[in-house]
Image (cartoon, rainbow over all chains, first blue to last red; front, side, top):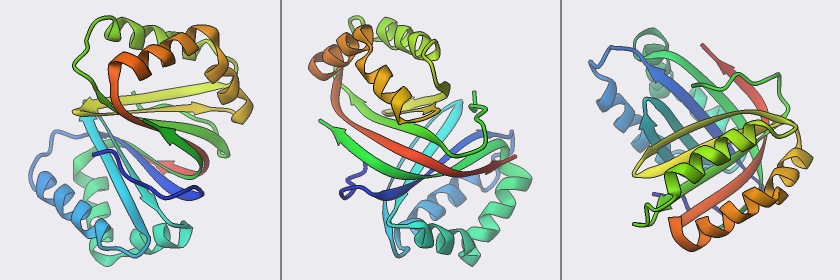
Length: 103
Length: 103
C-alpha cells in the first residue's frame, strides 16, 4: 500500500478533499479512476487514505505525464462530476519529489 | 482540515506509514509532534488521514525549515521511537510544490 517509487526526481500530485453528502456513483468512479490512472504512461504509484479528510497522492514520471492524465477524456468527465457533486472542497498540489527515504 | 497554503513554490513532506501493533505512547506522541511542528519557523500547515495506510502531508516554507524541524531534539527522539516501535514501514518524501488549485 506504500508506493514503490524510483529514485527522485519524479512528481507527486497531492489531492486533498472533503466529500459532499452525495454518494451516488462516487465509489465506482473513484475505483475506476485509480484503475485508469494506473494504465497511463508515466504512472508510478498511488497512496490513499480517508478519515473525514481524504488524501490521495499519485506519483508520476514528469509533468507531461500529469498533464496527459489531467486531459484524459474519461478523467475529465470524472473531474467535472467531482466538482459538481462529490467534493465540498479540494486542493490539488503538483510537487517535484526531490528526496525520499524510509524503512 | 485542508491546509491553507501560500502561493507556490513551497515544500511538502509526504509521510506515508504502516503502523506496528505497538500502541503504547503513540497517540500522545503523534499529537505532541503535530503541536510542536506547528510552532516551528516556516511551518505552513498539515493534513493527515489514516485508513490502514497513514498519510500525513506537512507544508513548509523552504528546505531549511524542513531541515531544522528534522533536527529538533524532541522530534529526533520521536523519530527514534517511531523507527524502533511504532512503524512497520514508512516512506518520507520531500517535494517542492510548484502548482496548486482547488475549490
